[in-house]
Image 1: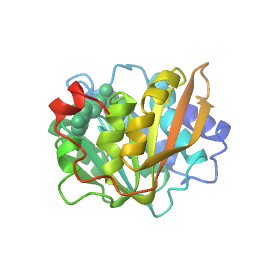
Image 2: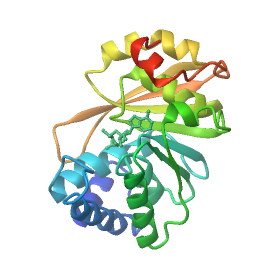
Image 3: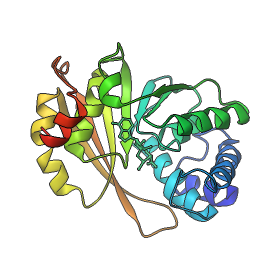
Length: 237
Ligand code: SAM
């Protein structure tokens, strides 16, 4: 796995911009993921090359579009740590906060970072994003990220409240997300955001292209958002 990750980081132009031991750290994380996946549902990808490419290199590609150095980030619906944990390994100065509604996944991620040399503290938030969005963590992160969590309209309501004005929400999507993006137009405006960049990028060693949608937070999110989950689901913005 380490060689695939090294070669992929090189192809992404990231060699020299990430710690020299990052491929080894990611490979160790990958081994722990595949081992734990036998007893806990963490990923549908079950072989090392797939984990290296479709999880690690997919997330690593974000470094080509944002400067995370010394910034704070909340990864909403992090699951097995994607993209949050990968970004932390690649940018150790990033202050990382991993949020998920499943405590077992967060407990496992805590074990992972304790096992990885040089990866200092991470913060975990157990619970639902729409609830944490009202608990004193509003507008206090430079970045919010989300991958494979929900439709973009819903994601905007879950994620934009966490982002400080001037910060960014990074939504990792497929290239088939044009309609989703158009439908999210109203939600983005209501919640204080603006779509500023769309990047389609190839995942090294695959014929897969993914998309990063970058939204800038231009105004505070109105107090009533995020709403309760039933209302978000029944009546997305
Ligand atoms: N981001 C990871 C990835 O790309 O592999 C995980 C994706 S997994 C399909 C979705 C994760 O989001 C699950 O771990 C689930 O528990 C979490 N999740 C879904 N809705 C959530 C919410 N409203 N608040 C917090 N976590 C949520």
